[in-house]
Each structure stands twice: as structure tokens, then as C-alpha cells.
Amino acid sequence: KEMSIPSDVLTKPITADYLLARQDPDYQPNDTNEKNLREAVQHMAYLAAKHLSRATETQFDVPKSGRPVLLAAVPVVHYLMRLKEAEYNIFDPRLQPDESKLVIMAMLGRAWLTGRF
Image (cartoon, rainbow, N blue to C red; front, side, top):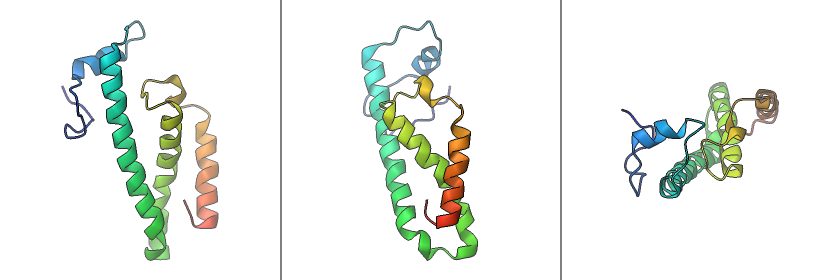
């Protein structure tokens, strides 16, 4: 079984079996595992936001012809904001794909027009 959370991010163990079982709607969550998972997700989100912040700071060092590649960061920023609102619960239904595609398209357009993501 493979887990997407890097082992060095996990301060406390989370088994792949738990992650698979957690996806079952009838599963009764274990508070300890929930807390460990949220801490790991929060740490990963923090690292991602840190990298995105650095990219934002240095985006004007990228030649104008290469900047469209940075547009891929726009939906990531949007997802990280939603993840924070969900208190880093990756199973929160608010994180499921929905009408946010329209929001992401609007954000991409704004980033394209303003040159900032």
C-alpha cells in the first residue's frame, strides 16, 4: 500500500489501512488518527504555501514568455485556502470538486490579466 504523505512529515504514525477505511462513509473516526492526519496535512499545506509564496515573490524574475507556467499555482492556492477553512480535514465534503471550477477560471483570468497569482 502506498501513502501520499511523506514519512518525514508524519510525527506520529498513520497507517494506510486507516486512510483507506476513513473513506468509507460508515467508518467511525478515531480521534488520535484524525489528529495525527490533520497535523500532517497542515504541515504539508504549510510547506506548499511557503513554496508558493517564494514563487510569488520571484515570479517577475521569470521571463514573460515563461510566466504562463506559473498559472498552475492559482488552483493550488485556492485549494490551500479551502483546506484551511476545512481545518485541514482532507475528507471534508467542502473539498470535493464542485462549482469551484468557475471560481478557478475567474482566478486564472485575473492572474493572467494582472500578472500576479
